[in-house]
Length: 79
Length: 483
Image 1 (spheres, one colour):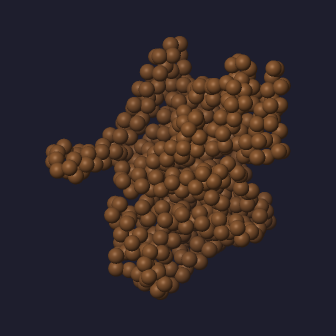
Image 2 (cartoon, helix red, strand yellow):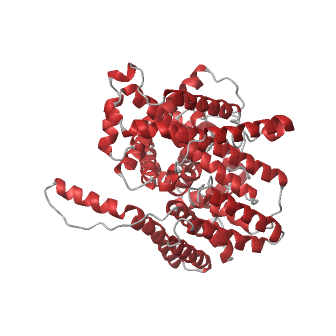
Image 3 (cartoon, one colour):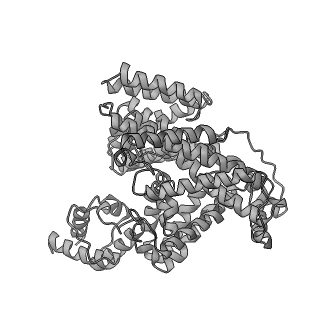
């Protein structure tokens, strides 16, 4: 799986979890760019991502991501 | 020296002149002035607490540098713990020590064991809750690698004691304020006018709305046992408006003064009473505190508890709001206030409503019936909570609730100054209409500079100044100074 594939799958997870089909992700997307992505939905996203990719992150890793690109790198590093 | 006092006006005039004329173009000298001015401003209240402020600044300055320098993870952690211990320990000693001692004695007295532990007389250093949160977040951000440590002590000490927001916030993050202290600042006429405008709006909220409400809330809360429920309801309505106008008015002034010296600091209120549910209310009320807790308490906790599903989320919310409650002071009333607001989230979480974003009302002239009903609902929930917030102790709060929910709700309110109450009510309506029309702006009248021609604009300023002069109630302290 390459980084672009991860991005496509992440976009699907975001659309499902945030209940918004219009969410478009790029590697530079941050929480400020997606209206529904706040501190409360964040935790749902993390759980969905971990389940989908069958990975487990530490608290520190989760809090270190600055954008979707870093999250995708985090997923690939665990694979 | 409060913002709306003669000493502060004189202080700020001299400061402004030196800052933009004598030290023009030299930001390092301007920073020294900011630091000296902040210490003068703080020392005006009580110079003894300056030692604490300086000591705290020095310790955290050094810790920040060493946390970054140290290679060993274990050592980094220890340095961080020293900082956290100082911050939380300082708050504990000055704010909560007696509360814990008396609660401990009461708990043992309940099982018939009498303890003789002495409480000590401690005076609360002004602004300690605000500047402690600045230093804690600074160290955590350095530790997490979010920011680089500050190596210029004048800049760091100025960040901790920045006078516009030292006493009552907003609680600025280092990542926002420190970079502004590290670069050249040019006088910008538009920015200065905007600062003045926001100060004027803050003065209106504080002196005309909040202080007039205070006259009635003091009367009604002081005698609630002998008044009918309708008076209590009116008093509670006035108090809810008072606390908003008081604190958001103060924040407007703080932001305005910072803008006058070339800084953009954190927004603290975003029209909270136009929220659609309680979660949105807390995203718009005392934003600098709630976002601080979201970043450093709620998010780490919710990550830890993520395997517990909704129960984990509720637990994280309850702990978060417990801290919001006791941040306000050492009293069981604040504990209960926090827990009540935390509990308000539970139905939203269980029904999954919290994860669905409401459409923003910004730019909308007329709300739909449901939107209006939601706003009223949020206001009523806030009102219920403010009974506990205002009460001196839990039994007083329940005494108030007992009187409030009684049949005398449907009687004519008893109030000593009826015409005064009507005028205050009119000012509240004016406040809400202007806020509704200006809810897309940074602050309610933020866009009149671009929206109206010069004569209309000046007409509005003149009207505000005249209203403040004629209708300002006198001598009320800012509520948030006690925190």
